[in-house]
Length: 210
Ligand SMILES: NC(=O)CC[C@H](N)C(=O)O
Image 1 (spheres, protein in one colour):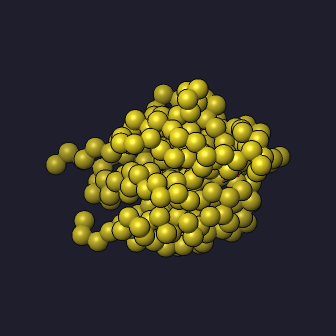
Image 2 (cartoon, rainbow, N blue to C red; image 1 turned 30 degrees about the vertical axis):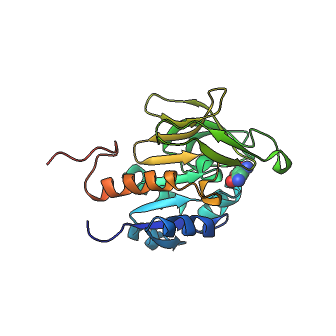
Image 3 (tube, rainbow, N blue to C red; image 1 turned 180 degrees about the vertical axis):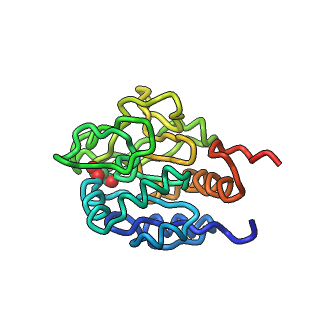
């Protein structure tokens, strides 16, 4: 394709601006997503960090839950950070009463797995799947992946082995926030997934057969 893919950032609550800046830094076109029509326009969607229970409620109030679930089922590439990871999880542990997710990734995530705001921390992670230097990762009331199905690939993990970045097909999720550091490799990886999808890829990151 000639033009850069159009990446939407779900703009109901959370660190929307930080994602827009990270996407602009890697040359993607961006759009704030607030309506069903916007979802149809974008080549990929980012679910930002914030508060997953609030984003869930607002998405349902604005009639976006079904369109987003449908888009995910149809193969739209989606990248979720922190609250966004929770929204992509098929199963939430310790959600608030009635909390729902969009789902799509066959995993259970535990909300606030490391404690509250004051237990936020920065650490260095090995991320063999993205290669290069270790990742500086910021965790803010972050979730962790407690269990996942066979299609879920671990992209980065804690020293104790728990997954904090995962991919399943066109869906990418990180428990931490690359959008608040100068760490662009996850957004780059997402953009590659989007490009492959736009070009007719199958969601594995491999080129479609000619
Ligand atoms: N930084 C974040 O996105 C925090 C996520 C928050 N704990 C939630 O449940 O949504």
